[in-house]
Amino acid sequence: MDLSAIPEEDRDDFRARLARLGVNPDALDDETIEVEAGKSLRLEMVGESPVSPMIFETRDLDTLRRWIGSPDKAVQSRRIQPFEGIIRAANIDIGGLAGAAAARTATRRRARTARSASATSGARLSEITKVDAGALKASVDRVKAEPQQARLSAIEVDTLRAAARTYIHGDVASVAEFKPAIESFFETFQVAVWLKTKIVVKRNSTLALGTGVHNLTAYEIIIESGGRIRSHGHLTVSATKVRRPALINPGLSLPNHVLTVNPLNRDPLFP
Image 1 (cartoon, rainbow, N blue to C red):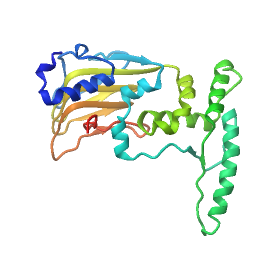
Image 2 (cartoon, rainbow, N blue to C red):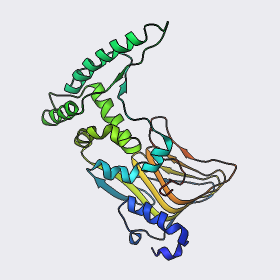
Image 3 (cartoon, rainbow, N blue to C red):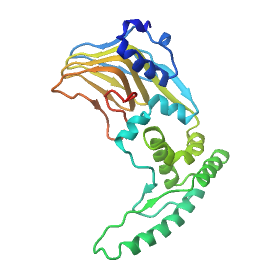
Image 4 (cartoon, rainbow, N blue to C red):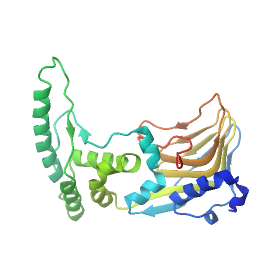
């Protein structure tokens, strides 16, 4: 795509969005995804899709963060709390090496919390458990080597998922030690990317995306009155310009199990 067609004041922003995906303007076509008024269009990562995506693949968590994660300035502006562990109200499954270490840590923490809260009548105590990153990596390696005999404990699986979400959308420094375990556990990350000049969702229409991990990147996204973008998986939306009705906020419609998503707004890539 010839960026000369884009207003000069928008070019640096759009180049930065392309750079996050590791592509240059030549990879962008001039096609427009347009959903007709009153209709719906569903895009899929696999199988039949009216508009085929590019499939990005990586084993590196930092690369995945660039593709679908929150920009650092966005994280800083939201003042996200660092990762401290998993909140568990009941017994801890100690089926793994890290789970056993977590149980011992939680027992000590519970005792300290109980002493500090002893003066509070009727107080409900929360239990935050953080497993040892080295032990977690050892557990993952053991499961890989002995898949029929070994298994990860519930606290280990929960920690891997929570730490991965934090690495992508939160305070990276607080979970940096878990990076080797996360990459070993998930092995390969795949993202379906639709890279277009313009995406238009007409009046009372729906642009739907199936399950999986998706990225919609465009110079301009236009959502008319009653239009919406609905996702059944993880969706990241990145656009230099977003036009939508002033009195209606279509936003993104997501199922309850989707925990991480970038809002349909201009990410603060620049101050």
